Image (cartoon, rainbow, N blue to C red; front, side, top):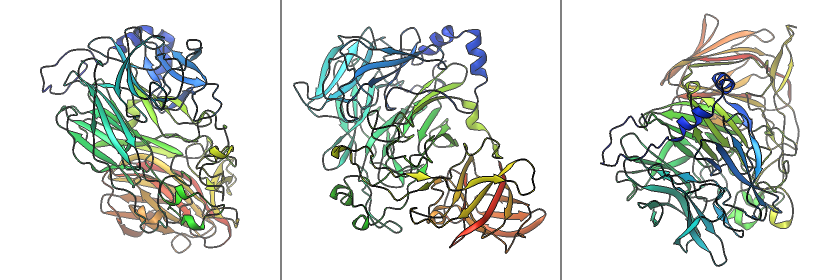
Length: 607
């Protein structure tokens, strides 16, 4: 059954998940056994381009991810077409596209190149493939549809002119279920960003752009001293809910994505309002599953407060000062996924991936700039696989981007623990180094809106000589750092009521302890402003030099903090957390050097 909701129209044509049976036929017994072992996300490859629109499925069920190699600059499309192919999502082989072609790259905007179809969507009721692309200049300047009965790899697709307007960051077309319609989400940018959907009711032969209202702009309010890059409605993405309504999320410069709804299959839309999803200058992705559930992929993360750009050294350009560019992205090192059956109640809020170079001292230039300007794990595209699995491509630069598979049941887990036996791969501890801000690619240098990093909290031998290691959170004076406050940030399944258990040993100043509904930088000096619960664990409540088991039992109003059987104190909730809590944020309390710090042996969370 490809749809389990009420169909409010007469349209019942096409199996929207046609490829799942094809994929099942391609799986060997070994493939099935290997996929069955996947639960939490497992990295399976590195895609050949930015994540957004490169994934597609061929008529025989083969999965492809298209991209471009050999570019001379990340902002040029002068390379050659390549794609990775897989029958099972686990094993991938590299292939080159048609000679001399540069098919649609993943931004959906090209400058030159022979037309050849890259990744595209198969229309379930006709079998035809379709994708949209914009040319920035030349005789084809504007936005076009590519149509093909062959599919990806077709060197002579039919071209249909849509508009002279250059629409940006075009997602792949989404076929609706309640109406025989294709919808593409995109935007137009002039001095502002204007979200759009582009719809077709005739298999891509003609299209109608429909504007949505832009979101509010960022206004500096404490602790911000400067203006963020003004993205007031960029890179929207959409999914069809079980009741037939459409839900759309748009990128903003605010602390949350904006959410829009349509009750008439995309002809008209609400004006938009803040959603429950934290997100700043990042791109969401919504995926409808074969049973009607919806996945949301996004960066559930908060950037550092915006500084006074007039005081930044080395100086930034007027574009950054006036909201037309960003100094540095500090919330793109982690990404997340949640699931819903109704579009209202969401489950999971789990870390999908952490940037593998998040601690790199050469972060700004690592990976070069030919594959992508941005080093991040933001931007997504995903496909449902057989047997309850999801394949997702995320990230931008080759140093950061990855493809991963996870099991949907992982999103419904109710507990998690961390004992550092696998090192620090499951936590965030990085600190920012005072670096060049702004983008310098136009001046011939690598490095784009990013700061270098270094290690913060470190693993040291357990002082009880157990043979294991524990995490030490301290403070070391280093004028090269943006902030000296060491910390650790750890994710657990979102819960409205639960218990956090810490094995903790205070040797120095103790730790600020925060329970949050989103990721906040380990060294963020303002983290307490955004925490659901915020309190201190130090020598005033915990005897120094010995291990303690501290439990934090919380609900939606109060948290009770105990050491063993003794209640230490209760804490009222400080800010609303409508999606529950999903993070613990521990940060040194030291105001000066503290080489002893606080030790953490284990963290557990249970609903």
